[in-house]
Length: 320
Image (cartoon, rainbow, N blue to C red; front, side, top):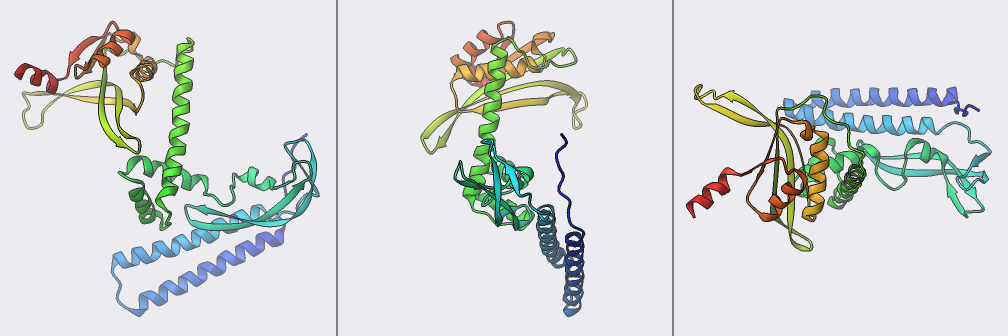
């Protein structure tokens, strides 16, 4: 049986178009009056136009969401518990989006068995009342992972989108993404350990490099060692300043870092190296700083690799 697609009433569509047309005309009048009021620089015009565009986009998104929810509610809806529950009333829901706060009124149903209300429209659209949209959540997580602090992530978001959030919201989004990635890593490691290797690289590599290191970072729980791993290849090219000198540069780098035990890092490195085709490569080079745990890790997972102490530590050891 094909699902029934709600039909949006023509009058709702007409109201939506009329409201957006009115807003566009009002914005055009505001901009023309603002420009005529005094000489404006390009920077001022850019900032002013961006703010107006953001407001228009916010209205467009809110109107589109409301248009999708404007169909006549069904008298009953199926609940996950198996009950067919009756329609209760329309109820407003607020969400913070990339374009700012928006509100939508959608039909709500009452489940006597669960003694709770629920809105099928929320599940249909991915709406989480009182929270943030998927787009804003993704943007906050990316900024939180890239910036030096969650305060800076919130500041960059405000600069890019004119939407202001508290740093804790950036923290929550970033930690949620980190949890998803960590779970995916654990699943990949478990599958690899069970013999289900990830899809291997399509081409055979002549040489693959593995690098592992550790550094101390200060966390809320004190100083911890952040362990890092990388898998990469290299390319050789002549120096622009000294054409007679060849330079070796890393490329196609895949890397990861975690505050974890060496054993887990070894499994992560092995899984990623297998995906990159290290076991079919002509030569494998393992580079580290000489720490015992690094060479133990390499010996366990890559016994065929050529082990090389990195230049910085090799020079220091020789000088000592």
